[in-house]
Figure 1 (cartoon, rainbow, N blue to C red):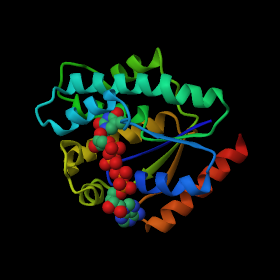
Figure 2: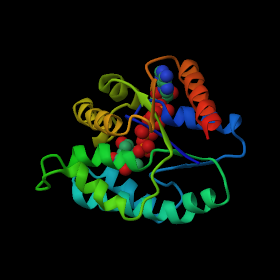
Figure 3: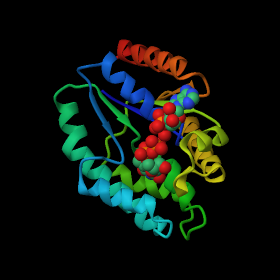
Figure 4: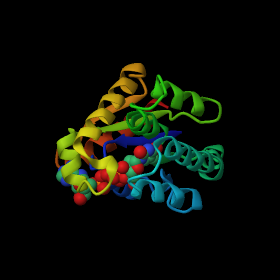
Length: 197
Ligand SMILES: Nc1ncnc2c1ncn2[C@@H]1O[C@H](COP(=O)(O)OP(=O)(O)O)[C@@H](O)[C@H]1O
Ligand SMILES: Cc1cn([C@H]2C[C@H](O)[C@@H](COP(=O)(O)OP(=O)(O)O)O2)c(=O)[nH]c1=O
């Protein structure tokens, strides 16, 4: 089963993902952008480059996803593991659709979903850590172009579109709570997801 964690920068995904390692020692924990491949390194260069072309950046993130799928996600699922990914395809649908909103693409989110549809493995469930853009930007320190509150407001609206389209896939957790309460809510959600399986 593939469970993904999604949310704005600073929503607490990585904090939760790290804490879950103890509760689920047999699960495979992974992330996008990947942190152990040159594809991930290329993505990180694009994140840090304020002049990076947004369409080129989409393809770098998508290349990293293809590598992540074939090298990590599909083999782990084939072995029957629970896979927990800190960010996954919804991050592209939310972030790159916002980054490409002023481009020549008429419907950026649909375009990005179309590119993925041919080869991706959609998540079984997605835990969405919901936080307002101002809190997100403040927590993340607004250190890169994706972490600014105005941009994050567009990203959040895109996540809401994704949730509206597939309400049964998403579990929303209020990420403005304390880290302890957020973790408790995520663990409860995960227990329910695994019990339903
Ligand atoms: N529930 C929370 N309340 C307050 N601060 C938090 C909470 N969760 C995480 N943080 C802090 O916010 C910052 C970003 O958290 P992080 O887990 O890296 O978020 P993300 O991976 O979603 O960007 C870190 O300094 C972290 O300690
Ligand atoms: C995976 C992914 C991340 N991003 C952005 C979100 C972050 O600003 C940045 C790095 O992701 P990440 O390392 O997960 O940042 P954080 O822990 O702050 O949430 O890349 C995209 O724009 N598209 C994507 O597909």
